Image (cartoon, rainbow, N blue to C red; front, top):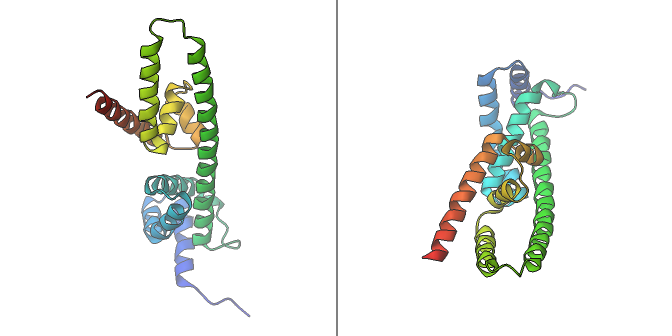
Length: 192
C-alpha cells in the first residue's frame, strides 16, 4: 500500500532542498509557512515573548545552516523544524538555570568580599552603591541581566558570552545595550 501524497509536505521538502543550496527565497517561504507554529511552541516553553523570538531566530539560523542534513525518510519538514526549535528552547532554559546558579554564587562571594573590607572609610558609600546596583539589576529582564552580569561581573567578552549562551553575537550586544540603558534608568530614578 503506497502513502497518500501530501502536497504541503512535498512543497516543504522541496524548499529544504533549495535552502540547502543557499536559496534565500526558499528560506523565506519556509519561514513564512512555519514561523507562527514554531513561535507558539517557543513561547509556550519559554513563557516570555522576547526569549521565544530569540529561540525562533536561533532555530531558523540552525535550519539555514543544516538544511542539507534533513532526511525526508525520517520526518516531515515541520516535525524536523519543531525538534530544532524545541532543542534550542531546552538549551536556553538550561543556560538560564546555570546562569541563576552562577549569579547566586557570585552574589554570595561578592557579599563575603564586601563584609571582609569593613575597615575602609569609603565602605559605607560603596556598600550603598552596590546595593543600588543589585536592586537595579533585579528590575531588568532576566535575559538582559544575564548578559550584563556575564560581561561586567564575570569579565567575559561579547563573543565569549555569545558562545556560552549559544546566541547570535548581535543578540548578545543588543541585550547588553538594552540592559545597561535600563540599569541606567533605574539608577537615575533612585537618585532623583
